[in-house]
Length: 296
Length: 231
Image (tube, rainbow over all chains, first blue to last red; front, side, top):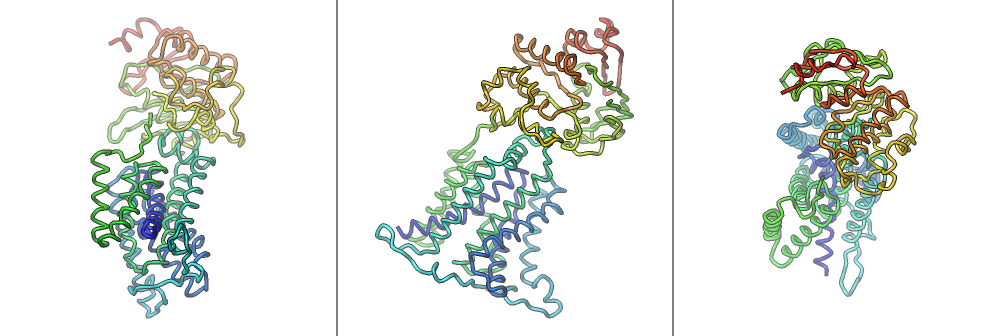
């Protein structure tokens, strides 16, 4: 049971990161390799806001969402926008952005050159204070459930629900869906597809940023912490079927649990190995992913 | 109303439309004819600014729109019914129609009553997936969607191509009615000479991206058709 809940929380993080990646890929067919860095920035926002502004972890969630969304907006406006339809170029460019962002944290946004150090930045590992009530655990069905893991799961479900509502129940969602499957026709219907792109990129980045806040509560924060997340999230998206909310949800669940259970029985390395094996198996038998919309 | 001057259009590096001058008058059906591959669809797509690069001017009611992005052109009053209909998968019939409302300047988000008059059957299928309709029904849905943009000019790309004969008559009737009864200006790319003759006031025949012949519908002689359109 404990293992299951830990798996659930891993899955929750995966889901939030993958959801952002999937929205960005689904809308503009861009694989954002800087997506993991949005997780990292979300985590650093938490470090800085708790250290310098006295924010609690809760308030860091909306704050990190907004800040990483702003980062996403700027990345889309300045770089990605110029590279639409050029998959390889966007891969390289976003990877470059990822490296730049990591180094910016290491050099204190360049302030280190002037001898100014901001506490919480730099190459060192950082930790984030978790609110006392989330450090407890409670008993559920005869098992000890760490409150923080349950919190992570709740937030992920909440953000998943908000995203579903946004995509399927709002006017913006209608525009988003139209742009992602029939960009030219959507534009010919008067939809500002550039604006939809920018907002989708910002929203996807914001989700990763919020995930970063949650990650910072149980992992040490460092400039290169984001890289594994983009890999894992990408696996989730591919295994779940591209452009499918439910697919992303289920495949994040499966992969998170697989990793958690195997890691508990054997160790973390085996956890990762089996995770990759499962993805390979899924793709062998269902190359389109677990869930696919037949788009005809 | 629509004035093209020295229009050149390119797909990637291939030059499709060469120095084209064209005038469409308000309230007419203007028919663009020609064999396959002479640039008819490209011409329409460059009116919308879809996937093409252009040089030259495209003036709609005195405003040059040749540099505007596609969505602005739609908002400015070009309603587009593309080849192959391009009904958006995943959206139902109503949502597909309402997609057009994004181009409206008055902010209204409802189906124009005209749509129900022309295509009453759509009302019974509002919650069905748009892509589950038959080809002919999808074509009518695509026209409905373009009408929802409240267009000044309706641009149709071979609206009856590959559609069952009984629906073809309905669609042709609807296009003529839009023009005659509702005063809508229509630009029509067409392969069917019979329909071009009965519906259009004026025509142009393209060949290799240039105007090969043009005139009033009455001047669309068998000889012209033989010369520029027969295989």
